[in-house]
Image (cartoon, rainbow, N blue to C red; front, side, top):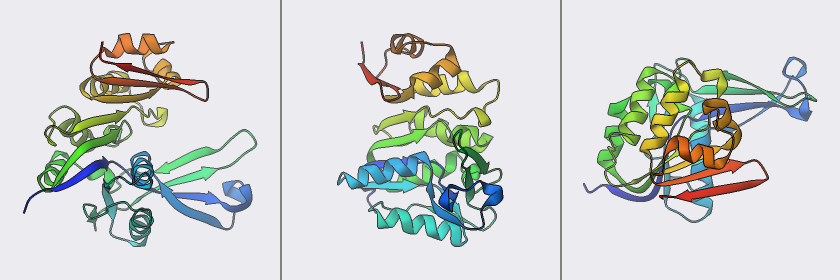
Amino acid sequence: MAPTPLDALCLGEALVQVSPVDGLRLRDARTAHLSLGGAEANVAISLALQGLDVAWAGALGAEPLGDGLIDQLAERGVDVSLIERRDDAPTGLYLKDPSPAGSRPYYYRRGSAASLMDAETARRWAQTTRPRLVHVGGITPLLSATADAFIESIVVERVFGDAIVSFDVNHRPALSTAGTPDRLATLARAADLVLVGRDEAERLWGTVTADDIREHLGSRGTLVVKDGDREAVAFEGE
C-alpha cells in the first residue's frame, strides 16, 4: 500500500489537562474540567482548522482518558489513525493549580505511554505516511532516553525522507538536566524550521536578542524568534 500523503504530521506527547472549575486552587476544588493538553496536538488542531490535511501521532494509554483525547482531536479534523495504544502504560496528566500569582502546573508523565516511544515507533509511521512537513518539539526528547531516540530519528536521521522538519524548542525547566541546553541546540541546528521564545533561549543559552540566538544556532533553514506580545523575528538562511 502506498504511503498516505499529508500536509503535516505532528508528533509528540498529548496529556489530559485537569483544570479546577471556578478558578479554585487544586486543594479546594471538588470538580474539574478535563481537556486536551500537549503542544504538538494543539499545533495539529490549529493546522486542521486552516483546512490542511494533518495528522497527530503519539502513544496513549489504552484507557478512557486516551479515548477522550482521540475523540477531541478527531472532532477538530485531525487524522488520528496513527495513534498507538499501550496496555502497559497510562496517558499522561497535566494539572493546573490556579492562584492570584498565576497557574502552577503539575505533571504526571513519568512512565507514560508517550515516554515509551522510540526510534522504531517513528520508523513505523514513516513507512505508512508521506508528510510534506513533520512538526516536533523539545519536550519529547526530555521524557526518556527512548523518547530522545525517537526525536533523533526524525530530526537528525530524517526517517521521513525529504519532509520539512519543524522543531519548537518549547523548553520546560522542570524536565531539564545539565545536558538539556546542548541537546536542544543540537536538535534546533538539525531542523529546517526552528521556533523559539527569546526568553527561553536566554534561559537556555544566555542569548539576549534575536540576533544572538541566530548566531548561536547558525544560519541553516528558517529561525523564528518569538518575544511575547512584542514581536516575532524570522531569519531565512543567510
